[in-house]
Length: 328
Image 1 (cartoon, rainbow, N blue to C red):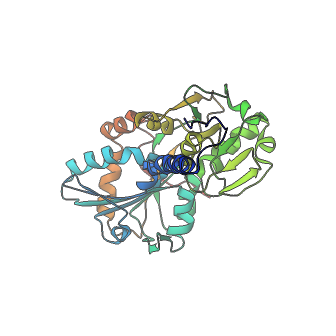
Image 2 (image 1 turned 120 degrees about the vertical axis):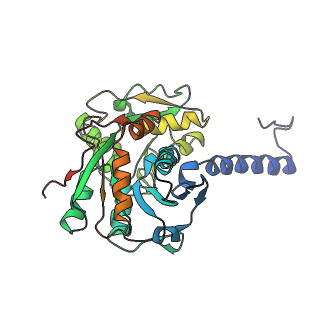
C-alpha cells in the first residue's frame, strides 16, 4: 500500500519508487503469461524442450500446428507419445488460434518474430471442422478425427467481486467484458458469438463490431489481440471484470496459482454439444508416417486421459476413428 504524507502529498522519490513497483508488478504479471511463451516448442526425445526455435518447423521429425488453448496439455502428451516412439527425436508444436494458422501460415507464408514458419505442418488441428473442410477443398487434406471436446465458461477474479452469475450478466452496464477476437479466434467466431446471439445480447455486448486489440464498445467490451488467454492478465491488472474462455483455461490458471475462478455456463449456452477438436494430416507434410503414428496414439485411452487431466472432455471411440472429411 502507498502511504500518504501528512501534507497529503507523496515525496517525489517515494512516488517514483512506488510507480516503478507498480510497473514492475504489471510486467511480472505479463511475464507469467506462460501460454504465450509456449506458442512454439520443440520437444526432444531426451525430455528437453526448446522454446521459440521456428526453424524447427522445417526439420523436426513431426510438426504440428494446433488450436492454441491446448498448450498446457502438450508436455504430458508429447512426452507420453515419445516414450512409445523414441525414434521420433524432435516434435515441433505450435499452439495459437487455428484461424491464424490456416490463413496466415498454411495458405499463406507467415512469419513469427520475423522468421518464416513452414507452410506444410504434418498435422493441423482446429476447434471447428470447417477449417479442415477448407483444406480438403484445396486438396491438402483427406481424413480427420475428433479427439477431444471443451465448453465455454466465464473467467473472473477470485471472490467474483462483480457477482457475475451467468452469461446474461455480460450485458450489464456496470461490467467490463473481455472477449476473444472474432477475426481469428475460433472460440468466439464459432461459439462465443453464437452463445450471445442465442441469449439475445450479442448487439448489446459487441455493438456488432469485429476487430482485434480493440474496444468493440469503449470502456465496456474489449476484443483480445491473439489469445483468449490474455483475459486472466487483464483481470489481474484490473482492466476487465469478466471474460469468455474455455473451461480448461480456468483450470490451468488455478493450477499455476493465479487468483482466478470460473463461473459455469449452463447448457446449451456453453456449446459443449457443439465443440469438437478436429485434426488431420496434411498431404504436403514431410513426415506422413510419423503423423499417422501420432493420430493413432491420440485415439488411445492413454492420450484421452491426459486431455481429461487438464479438464477436456473425452471423445468417444467412434469419434476417434479416422474418417473422410465431409463434403463442402
